[in-house]
Length: 199
Image (cartoon, rainbow, N blue to C red; front, side):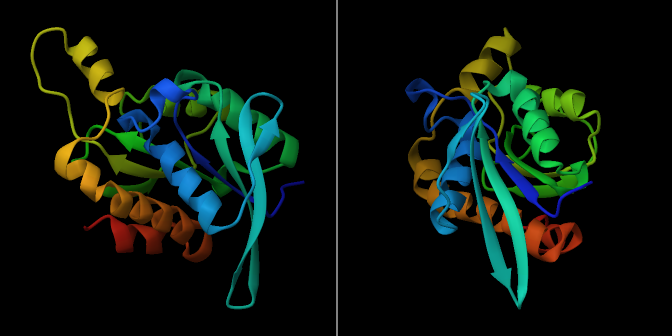
């Protein structure tokens, strides 16, 4: 039987060397939500840091789990599939927050379904859940410069850190991403799209 819980998962790579990198936007948003919602994250089967809580909104109680997969980005689906299976969370109640190179820094797009856009974490989740019908909060990090050895440039870009103006704007951007995920579970996907996709 499906549960009433939502699962919000921020994607990233575990380890100090990845902290603050573009690929860890999801982790950073999850940390912000954990602080905002007073959630303690604990180990889930060695696959993720996981916490649970309840949002109270207009007399409604919205139970949720908040997760940071510890499987490294390319195997994020293993962690999400384990959590969804263990707690009977349907795909339609999953929200994934992740970096997206197809969007300029500061842009957010909320969507459900669609292609992975070449994002290995999303590809892994699609495969492990057997569906792409979950909600995604795509957070723009911009693109690496085009040129020779595009793969190497892409890897260096997503594993690089924010500098200059982007570093100054990052806290506000992360708050927007956290707001978008919160809006999906409290007001629905279409409301979140209306509120964040046009910015």
